[in-house]
Image 1 (cartoon, rainbow, N blue to C red):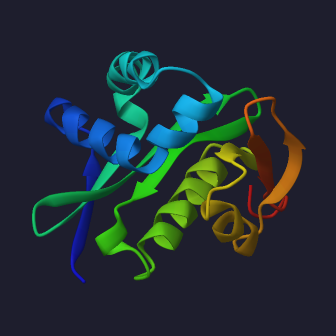
Image 2 (image 1 turned 90 degrees about the horizontal axis):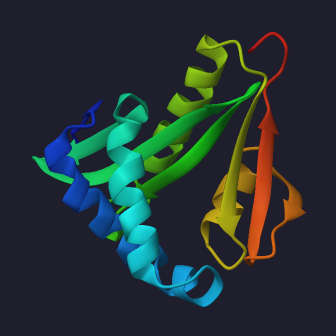
Image 3 (image 1 turned 90 degrees about the vertical axis):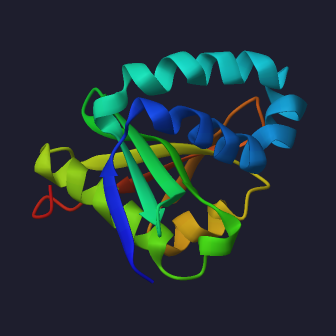
Length: 152
């Protein structure tokens, strides 16, 4: 599998929204509210965070992306998605490792994220060393991975 990870470009927005919708639409509608509200928020938030969004392509097709934010003394993993036909090849793990390396490069001691409790990603994160630290009122887990002092 030959893939390329590159910075976000404005022409990626439609595809990223499509990927998020495919993965999260039902959970968003059930626990947050109308999809259209979330989509409108994403259409503003992703471009305004462009410098913290990385897109992965295979043969010119966007198959994954990761979006992070600085949040105080930690790095917040806003979104990480790999399309179904590109999964089980280690791409998600590589993207997650890149997020952790980003945190270390910025001397941050932890990475935090929020994930729907029913998502198969929960076990993916746990296998990567993330721990559930709390639950939200929106059927989500807050998870955290503390990076060792030597790593940060």
